[in-house]
Image 1 (cartoon, rainbow, N blue to C red):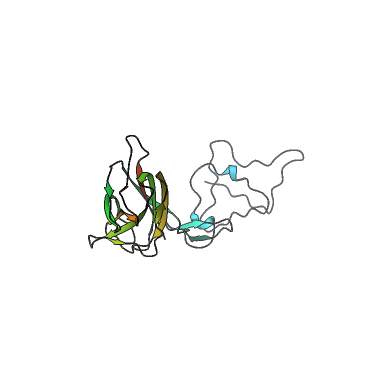
Image 2 (image 1 turned 60 degrees about the vertical axis):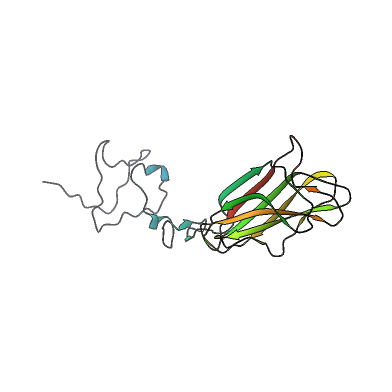
Amino acid sequence: MASVLKVDKLDPQSGTALEIGTSGDTITVPSGATFAVSGTMNASSITAGTVATARLGSGTASSSTVLYGDQTYKAEPGGGKVLQVVTAISEVNISTSSDAYTDSGVSCAITPAATSSKVLVMWNQGRAFMNVTQEMFCAVYVDIGGGGYSIIKDIVELRMNVPTGGGTLNLLHSPSTTSEVTYKMYYKRSGGTGTVYFHNGSTPPPNTFVLMEIGA
């Protein structure tokens, strides 16, 4: 039969620490009772089990919330996340004598995960060649879900006006779709006479497409 000791307070002897139980014993606080600590309980004393999420902060803990420094659960931060990266490299030599945009055949495709995503389009023109009597322009065209290519509105064209050289063109596009989106480079001669070469040289730097899906 278990014994019951009823007291209001237990104090250790002078110069000693109060110890309850012996190594290997289990100290039980029954259901309905409250174990209140007004002094300090070191976190290192918790050596087994897990702390309930409700004890860590206010709000609702879930797979879509995170615990902030003010000890509240809030929605996970969104926007600005790179969801995927797609690249394409080309060293094909092609040329045109047209003053109208011509398909270079160099493209890169990406399928956004959400309609709210944006696509960061980065193009590096490794090397081009043109006669001194004209310049060469490059522009990005886009095909959304197989609907046909069209130039991206308000695009800043890549303009090259040196006999041999390259350049970069970067833009943030909002395709608003989860269908496949294909970006392709077009190029043209800008006035003058002669031929421009979209890529030229036996061992030039390659032309490179990089597409990044940015989460909303």
